[in-house]
Amino acid sequence: MLHFSSASDMLPPGAAKKALEEALDHADQAILEGRNAIQNLRSSTTVTNELAQAIAALGEGLRGRDRKVDGRRSARSFAKRFPARQGDQH
Image 1 (tube, rainbow, N blue to C red):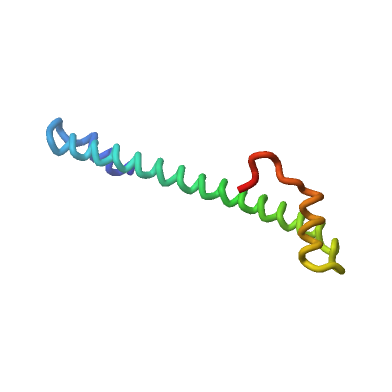
Image 2: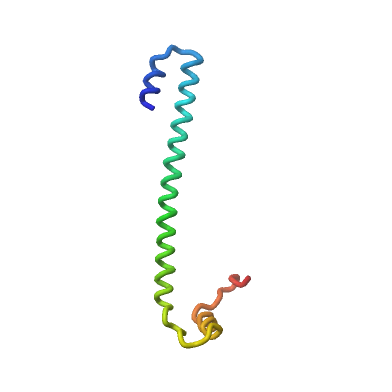
């Protein structure tokens, strides 16, 4: 980018210089958008990892509970421990 910018500085005013400067502006914008996209990917990975860890911790906490009863009983006891909030019902 710096080489093209230097070349643009050497050109006389005119259509070629204007076209090169516009191309440099577009390239700068593309680099900025790419950098932002990568940062967003990194931060979404962090959030995803935190969510995965929270779910794993919940699973560890629930492991072993209601192990000796059938699935319906387990679902009922889970529902009693974590009642639905108003508006959560579908």
